[in-house]
Length: 148
Length: 148
DNA sequence: CTGTGTGCAAAACGTTTGCATGCCT
DNA sequence: AGGCATGCAAACGTTTTGCACACAG
Image 1 (tube, rainbow over the protein chains, first blue to last red):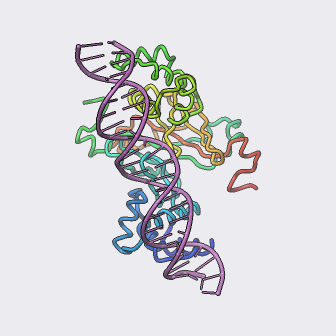
Image 2: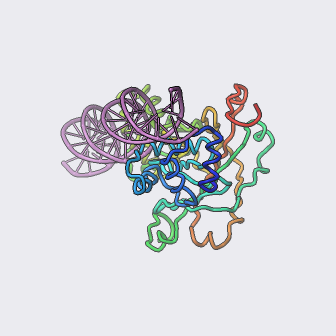
Image 3: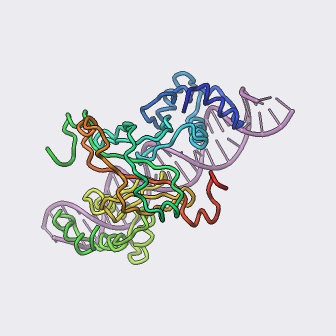
């Protein structure tokens, strides 16, 4: 998403009601690169807006995702995470602590795909997930495989 | 995974007990390219082995995944899917019907990653998920976006 | 004023856990 | 015979649903 203000404008155009709860969620997500879960967002918003319900956070995140302001990340089986950056980028997931870092280098060459496949499916989007171990986990020796 | 027989041998080496339930799950997975969920596997095995429990299917799939015989796929938020093909390949997900097809062309050029990142994380593995619409869904006009 | 968004509670769903029993080795 | 795997039931955590109320437009 862009700034809170610009996002509000986009939502207004889509006839969405601009509620204080929505604005708080936007503030939490703006520039947030930590890929928070719905629960994470709820906890943060609750500090500023104590009466908000988890359900409302789910509703707002669903709307933001459906309208393309944010992107739902399906990497952690236990809970969805949300990415405020909807531009093309990829993720590196640490097999140890499960943290998700962003990569802004496009590693994919769609031109390698045969025309048959391009024609058969309408590829609109793609994600690359790289799996490894982050520095912290390497230092702690948390790898379950390879070099001791 | 390879053939049921070869997989059994690998599991035997790992001191896993070869139970009839395990064998039935292996039979369901062998050569299966439909990326079934635990529930799907359960339903199929139950036809041949009516007393098997869903829990047992979960246990077996977990073991097979942990030992590298199959691979858990985290694409569908609602349920894990399992891929009997553990060789490097990617997935095309239909935004309409959510079916997952396999792509055996490697689209990724890891060499594009700066050495800094390669050194920082130990990239061991990567997945590419392409999103589009399969032929069926295109014919049905199920796209939610673009060209009518 | 109208109806969408909120908040509460309860339900739903996939998955995990606990435990007694069974059967592979 | 010993102990891991099974099967049943209950628990768990996330997400969804239903409904009355509130407030943005």
